[in-house]
Image (cartoon, rainbow, N blue to C red):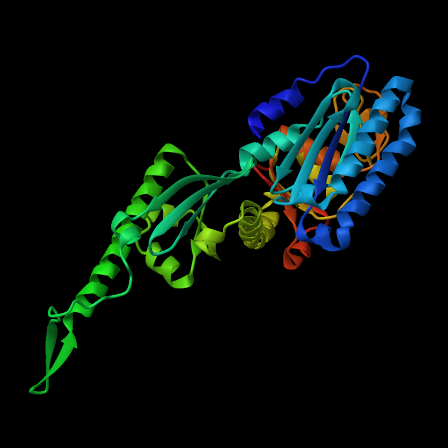
Length: 399
């Protein structure tokens, strides 16, 4: 799948008669337990069906939406379709022939929307912020390089050290040519099998030449094809030895290591293991953000709670939005300006009109944050959760 081209297809959607259905579905390990994500989808579809008849759509438009919802439910119901990702995004408009599926490393919240235009902002943001992971898998003779992005995992390079690939790794003595190495110890001499010793030294040297060659090729690849994270896969000792040859700059991009057999790699499994490492890094980052949040709160460079966060967001102060998983709250949205408020008062809207009720204002907060290019962080760490009242933010400046 060409990710950018498929996004452009969705962005180009225009129809006077029919609507487009947008689904964002979380598929983290928690959601996968006992197929919880299926229950989530079922509830989202029910909510949409309950409200469709009140929106004044034509019979043809409703039939198209019904087809969308059935097709989405059937697709998600097939376990084979939801592998190799932590989130799924689907855009569908049956009567306009639109059907696009995107597998993502993260979805902020599960959401189903039927509208005149696709709910695309989170998807575009993910494309910009997720970055690419490169996995180099290596043994004593070979190396394989995989690149993981929002398109999935692709093998991009392979190496094999020429001498190592053709030589027998076991020493075979030749008759009449045995040599000895002698070590002097305490006035005496100890004889060694020099042929075997020299052979093993040669094999070890070739292994390190292989590691050096792979390291250089990897750095050359990085210079031409920038990536954000690096993972090394293999057996423990080989990973340790190869890491010593790694360019210093690439060491700073390390996401971790994974145990694997170079000849038995499955792309979906590679993606899952990589996402596990990425998620572990995110949990560490959450703790760091929670600590910064506490410090900045005292200095007036952070806000805690929905009301204060909403005010800061509407004034363009927010640098990082911190959101507890599962937090939701009703609210209102001004009909023309799009300003988000918590009370139905005309005076709160710049245009002086009555705000429209919103079932869950948090979804709109995320959309507004992404529109302002604010970093959004979902907080899952239990320790970090205790410090935030549902939602909070680190600020760019204080007023």
